[in-house]
Length: 179
Image (cartoon, rainbow, N blue to C red; front, side, top):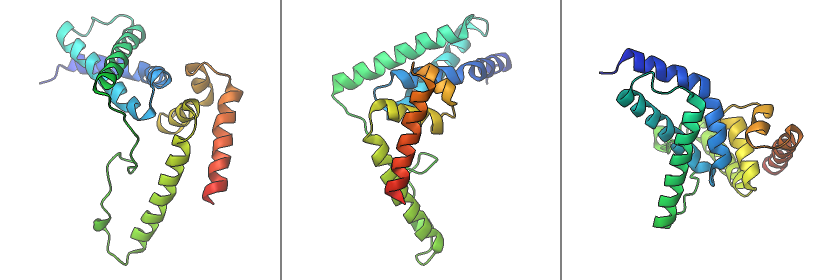
């Protein structure tokens, strides 16, 4: 059974830090496919610490979470290097799950629309994945994390005009290729 004060404190910390911690992890990740796992592991560790040490244990939330995120990043990548595993991004639906087309009737317009959308999404993902890491991180922070251009610029230590340039130039390229 969860302690209401622990859950409340966790929610409070999450609400006040999640955007900045996500931006920090994104800036430090070697592969955008790893971001969600490391982010989730960081906050799971926070919850475990709050349960073990009490809801008043964490004083400087952001500093504490950055330290946890650094540990998670270090462990994650050292394990990958030791195992010599290379993680790649797989095409999935917006919920992160593989999609089963057998749920649609064969002659369904919905199935055809979905198939066309998936082809376009897969093509867009391939184009974005072929871009330098900075461009991938800008796209991730803007579209998946919902950060603003100024927030992205700050988290990736680049100018706002540089962020806009990477975002809009790639969008224009996607539009030209996919239309």
